[in-house]
Length: 327
Image (cartoon, rainbow, N blue to C red; front, side, top):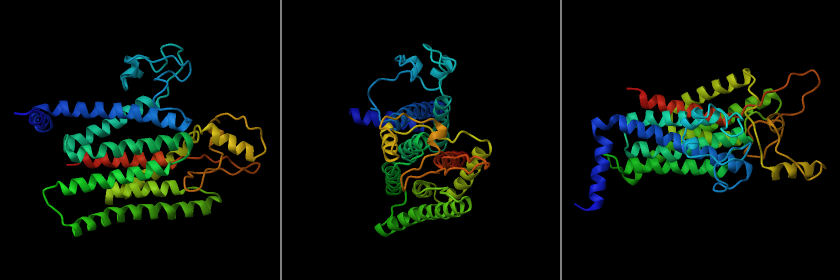
């Protein structure tokens, strides 16, 4: 037996043997948590305009390099007690939550499909969705390149599953499948577009940008008819975030963008990364706008800016996991 045949045999055993079920589920959780840790790093560095490769992983406060144990997803945060082992600065809770959350979603999908193509095609899509959610949270932007890359991965994965499935489709059948997938995506995007226009008219300012509409296209193509459950859940999450007064869900922007805005306003070119209150009050580029504040009149209550992208992605992940766990 050749080496390739042996590898295929071992993979088949791992993917199908009932006695290896818990090993498969554990491996799925570990894969999800590792990828979440990596995507979080990439999204944060991309938002700050830094390299993905250098410098190595380090404390953002004291810049001390992290050890291998400290880099272990979830466990590294717990071992350090939620604080940097060197400067004792609190480590943001989003790291273990995102790592454990994506790990659990991978576990749920693996419990339904095992390590089959139906599970594996979701891996790049979910990583890109997490990247979009984090970017929106940190910068109040949804980059078109990542959004359409996610859409391409969804279509490629669904096409692969159809072509390798038990029922072979003709070209006409494949085109009908594409029309259905993109049709549900278009309906989700249209729903978000109309909702955004209605909310903007009522609020007197832009409440939902085209970035959310494009993300809705991706989620509709991925979830098909279940996307409307996802959108309802996302709306509830956004309302809760606004009611609870979460601090804008907004964080940092690239210093170059802030310098450009300061120059246009006649301020000196030197600038700094704004805090959440400042970031949530700034206007974003056309087609990538999340929500923008306008100056509040004296005596009027302040408006909480909620990035809808994380709500959309969280709703989609919950819907995917629930669908996988349903009998």
